[in-house]
Length: 233
Length: 269
Image (cartoon, rainbow over all chains, first blue to last red; front, side, top):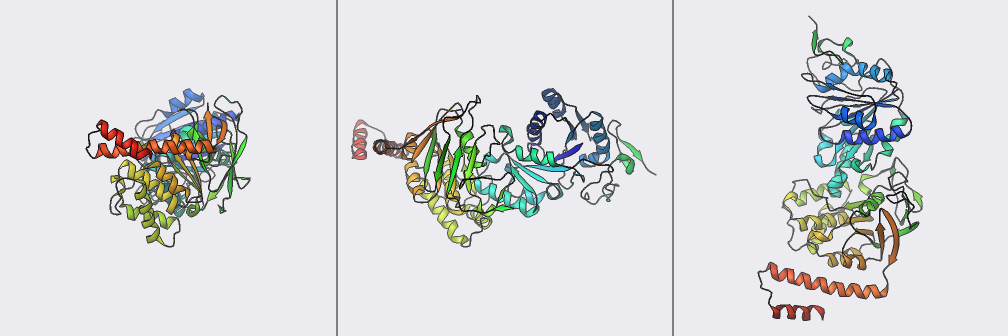
């Protein structure tokens, strides 16, 4: 199974991009599944399940930082998708503080950025952009050519080898190059590791343990089904 | 990998309309210096067509069209050098979001475009924009404080001068409070491909040819002939009359019968 992780600030158009991607994956007779990790509210799983009839699920991080939640539940999420017989698992993360990066090795990392967030955004978000494989720039029809060019330039300045895809996702424009990359992604493998280190902090994830799965961490944790619990002294 | 090439012409190869049937127009070339209009009723696919050009569609958009540059398709995972991006698109929704002063903003864009004489191109851009708009743009004004007409004018000037893009796509700019016939005259001096999506008969007739759209498909291409050129001169006079009345009304004049008569006489001479 191949794992594709989507990150990006709220309302940047991640779900719209994913919808268009799923549409094209299904046409190829491949089986995708979808998981949304969000903080307090999400209904994309129900919408996507209804629209495409594919396995879809949401996980609320609640009190936990959503990127930390991603780290401690992703192994179970991958197992769940494999049990469902999926060829592709699309994980959409909330990525709120912009200092983390949810991508793991042997997966495809896609950051979705909206052109309307201002020319300085690529300089502000760090590893969510720099560790991604593809940067999808959405809502390109709304801003001036000049700002678009500065935006694109600054994305490349922050992440030299990233693939930029400019997309007007509502109309399905610019989606095919993303699908091509997704098809070429290598299979996900256990044990999974984060690509980058989260910012300095006090929990096991924050201090630099990159192993995926609650069993590899202590402190305040959760699993896919079980609410927050504590393991430690 | 950056693509870096001099564009001599682009070729549009027809795909399909909204109902999946083949387009009437098979293939046509746009060469440097061409001005072309795309016309047709609302919802007929004009904007989709310029989006296809903008993305160098390679049979990978819903219309299945293909765009060739100098007879070659553009590779899938292409990246243009950001300082030499060949296409500028100015749409009816396009806006400036930056609140930087005009001069500072244009300087950033000129730097990204690798300009060597930044001060000069910035001034040239503002001068060009001021020829298109009624109210002069001042370098120190914040971008977000510009009026609708000033914004459109600056968008065009920036794409032409700083961007120096060989292909410029303009989506329904006629409603933006700029002097459109003047704009076309100015633009003709630059050896570029200009594509106008328009409902305006003057712009359509001032173009070298026009693409007629219907139900998402290119129906036919009409080259502007000598007779139509004459018609466009007449339309321009009508435009001038309208602009004249706009000036009078803006100045608080009352339009009496004698003013009406006089205006028609002076403007149609």
